[in-house]
Image (cartoon, rainbow, N blue to C red; front, top):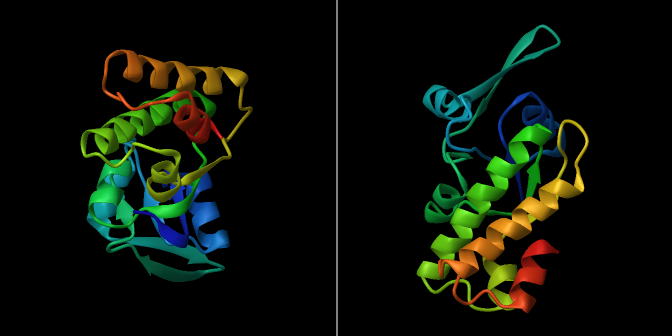
Length: 164
């Protein structure tokens, strides 16, 4: 279930950290194999040089390995800023699709109301130019999941809600 009014950032890279700090985000949601999420989880804090002073921001219960972990640990924000490189967007939409498949397996993705309750609003702010190809790739991933019956209840209304 989403935490209404909370903001998350994906991934915790340079641009993500900037958004996290300046927007006052509640959490980071990483991606498997991104090379930064696990080490940052291990450190447990974000250490910043704030005009010559070291500032430490605790990340305990505020950084998640991926969308599924954020959901499992009850940390899913209502709005997720997706600020990865453009070439990483297909990896993110792939993880998003797997998250949706998991929701469907647990009976938590059967209507447009479920989309609003379970899937964060994604504000895609890549470090570069976003192409129409990303939207097409995500749509293809959703259609494949429906065809392979991993998203059996994916109606056109739900698909439009997810794409919106």
